[in-house]
Length: 495
Image (tube, rainbow, N blue to C red; front, side):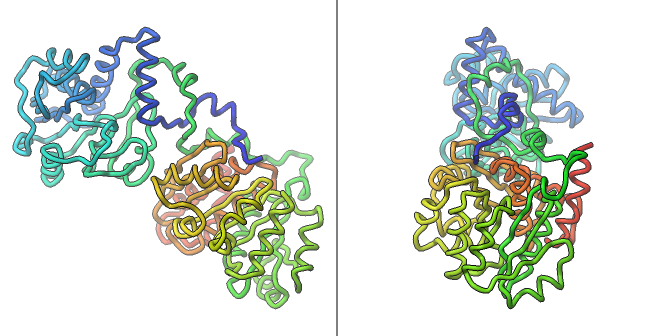
């Protein structure tokens, strides 16, 4: 039930992100299919030159070439721009004799003088092409490469990076000495490092160029990481037909805490706005006047004892439930989470519902039997999961360990399924850094679960819609604005 249901869309590889090794495999498969490696490199360098020409008028350009294939791409770019009438200088890290295979051939076709790499080589340049390392570098940038790129950054000369800015790790987005590029041109598909932070900001505008790699190579590679976009999940979003009624659209239950009541109320409104036909908040009896006085279309059910809450869960009326926002790090929260999970119905756990397991996370792992989505921020994640490693790897490991979909929130939210599929979100504006935004997200996931959407599709759709709603509002956003922004976003998606 946690599996990604959009298998047909996966097979089209929409939004696929390729690791550095997968991209190398794609090149090998392309060559095996009859596309010469020399031609792939020629197409790559030409694509970079064309993107430069689309954005800038002719000006003095310095192309910084490294000792590998990235440097070979740079020589092609330099040759193309020179032949188009640009003033081009090439600087090489190392010796031209150290270049191999296609890179060496394209360096020979350049034919003109090649300078040694140094910070001084950029003097007079009005555009820099970083063809030093790309995504293949596995260590921090250092030496002349680091000094030269830093000099270019200080001079505020626009930098165009081939593949990734040198120093940005293609698989993780780490920036180990990288300086920001204004434009990055990559090939076939993006890599995780193009959308994970800080890589996403260091890359600037990212263009994915077609260099003649057969599309069939992706059928062999079968990518498991994707950049979030509606093509992945739009077909799974529920659309009410003429015969729909409030019961057929699902009934969402939110556990409402006390004295912190705002979080659960926002979550409940989000569940309703995203389409749940009925939404109920179960609240301690003492909090009933607060919730009832603040909500209209959301039903409020009081409970006095844990047994009362248990009776609610044992009925068949609810389709999915959420606990965590404002619940409190308390014994009763611990017990309510276990009771919800024991039902094996779709469940969302957020905030306090995660923190209550910090002393023994294994209890949570063993309790998860049905569709379940966990939505921790970094602090909550560290309390119950291993924080070691990059964001994509640790989110995947957490999902695999607990058997639930894990949504590790942030400006580059990562959503991972237990079987290994992962999606990275890139549309969240900085205005989402406001209290309560995470509560709204958990309510949106709940609303989709209640309507029968799978756990993974609910999570990736809600995360994207959350970002789109925030972006539609702009500055001054409050979390309580988000639910009422959803209808317009959905209307746009549905056309």
